[in-house]
Image (cartoon, rainbow, N blue to C red; front, side):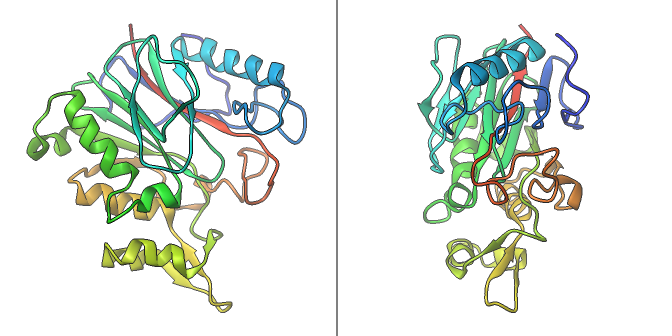
Length: 263
């Protein structure tokens, strides 16, 4: 495996040997402004040859084949393998095959990585507020958990304690301003979610996206959660030189967050 760019994030979490993960930043690629420079998304108007080159940089660095999704802020989970093409419509992917990197692209939304404590299954999740809230209290985290259990043929009563999660950078709770419909999408199913919203003088709410994810993971029994704690260092909007942010730059790129197992 090649060395990662010095500015990329390497998750600090107790995963088994043979499991690897990385979160890119906006540096280290070839794209020009406003996509500068490591944009991996091919649907935003960037030069396709630059996107292809950036994806090749990412693939060479990780030493595995990344699978890129067509993300739609939904709750579909895809099991990927060596023959899975890019651009399948889903907002999470998982695998038990070595050499395949489950990958999501983000620019303010929350990336979530999952790994089994045995190191025999991994998953990557794109969790914007819509996918996180879902319908009827079942969102992308709940759907991925259900699918992850089936992937490893694990008993749901025991599997939660065997899953390790990592939350990557997203728009932070000090700046993520939303309308009341967003708050209602969460609290109508989980009243405790109200703790993750703070009313502003203008009648809008500040939303703690990573905090909402931690609540939903805890409800599933997943307590080994690492990474984004809502502090400023994880905020994509307030660090424009490091991260892409859709809210601050309506035309911008996407970072890649991937997880894979050794061959």
